[in-house]
Amino acid sequence: MGRQPSHWAGLATAFGRQARLLGLSEHSQPADQQGEAAFSLHSPDFGTISTLLETEAGGMTHAALSELSMQAASGILSVHGRSSGLSGTLGLDYLAVLSSAMSLQATLAAALGQLCGGRFSTVSVSPLGCGLLSIGQYLAGATASQDPEQLLAGGYDPGLRPPFVSQDGVVFELETLDPQPWRAFWEAVGVPAEVAGQAWKAFLLRYAKAVCSMPAVCLSSLQALSYARIQELALQTGMAILPVRTPAQRQTDADYTALSGLWQYQRHSAPVSLRALTANADLPLQGLRVVESCRRIQGPIAGHLLALLGAEVIRLEPPGGDPLRAMPPCVDGCSVRFDALNQLKSVQEVDIKSAEGRQAIYDLVRESDVFLHNWAPGKARELQLDAQDLHAVRPDLVYAYAGGWGQDQVDAPGTDFTVQAWSGIAHTIAQTSDARGGSLFTVLDVLGGVMAALGISAALLRRGLTGSGLRVDSSLLATADHLAQAVSPISKTGVSGVFQTGDGFMAIDCQSPVHLYALAGWLNVSPDAVWTVLPDRLLSQSALSLEAQLDVLGIPARRVHCNLAQLRADPRLASHFHDKGYSSVNSPWRFL
Image 1 (cartoon, rainbow, N blue to C red):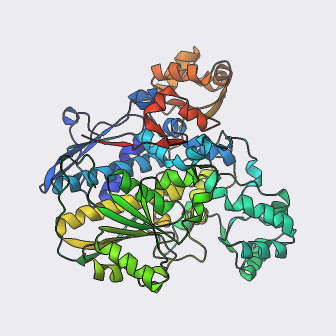
Image 2 (cartoon, rainbow, N blue to C red):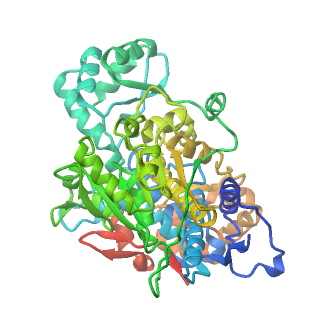
Image 3 (cartoon, rainbow, N blue to C red):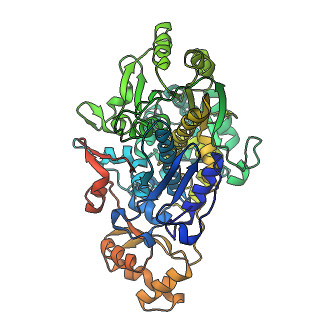
């Protein structure tokens, strides 16, 4: 490990934990030998690869970087704040976990590129770019050239969103992917069909928009019933229901492991011939082919990251195409939200339930390196497209499954919000937000996709080193367990959080006594009086002016934009975007 932001301790911790889970041995370098690299990868099978963090991007000095300031600068807090209030935070080292995983993924890909004859000795990673990529689909909706979404942080009542509360005080999530159980459940509760239909539209779009304003009668009707009665009605109508549990409750489950087993690998012995990179290849996965059959967010993000690293990704869609392509806002006939996750992929329409479709997949896999899917449990076996089926076609295939619950199946769809509730992540986020539950920003779908891509990159490198095909399983629940162990420490100074300024909100991360004394000197008061004087000082100035002043002091601070479109207007972020009729986020990686 080498040079990393001094006030972002969670980043170094996340690097170390994920490296160990990948089987890498960690060695600290003496301070006089660290240089500029955040970490270096050494192996007798390939040359040393140094990974650098771009910490000056966005106009922030190295000393002013922290988890909270980076969540603000990248727009994560803006998306979270749509339904949780602008003063709320995630309370997790989310961007540290995400950035370290994406850094390790690029480094392992570079190692594979070296094995195949390429020259990839240095990887440069922008944590700010990683954060922007994590909200890419929301940013696309906010910046579409036609009918952009005006979904402002702090613009929605946190009391009218899921999760729900019963008469006896149980906080819980409901989930269904089908409108029929939804209608039947609310009819049993006593909510008029017209209101239930209105609620369904909001409920269905919460994954895409990070807001879900439910009719007040829906919440009040549930608050009139005991949790046991609501459970009974859910069982009768086919609605899934899960309580919002604490992390301690999750840790009592039989399938829980404190080691956060993010990936499950199964080896399939096979002779492997490494492909040679094309001449002057500038990306390490060029020449590899990935077949992706995924819906929603988790799987498509994994495929998108592999494409950003140079892989050819062929996306399988049903006859007529993925219906999400039509979800507004659209540019040139395609949903910008969908395009943000799939723009680099080619498409092949396949009826996977037919014999012809299955044969078409076999034919594709025969010439491919990775098969990635996120189908419901058991579906792959039913379709004769499980790992054993595809390894019979391509023995050295990396077969990847990005699931919800992992090995232990809970009686509910394994979606972002059910896993947030069950894992304790929703409870943790609620402690630092104005809402009673987790985030409607799809924290686990996004991070789960990143972890799936990291697992695939590790499997590809292992294949190159050992000559084996592999199956690699990842899940939202394993991702949640890993994230739950990355809880940001609460500052003892009392001045870390999101604050009102003269023209909006900003995150200030005053973490240490050094920060506190610097802040006291800036305010010209004693450290004990900082909290008394600070609110009025912040209200008297603009966020941009305050950023500049606090940067000089080395205190992490950044504005929290109400509207994501304002990110595009910041000249300091211009290098992170290109225009596709919306602001599309560039790759956070550079290979030198």
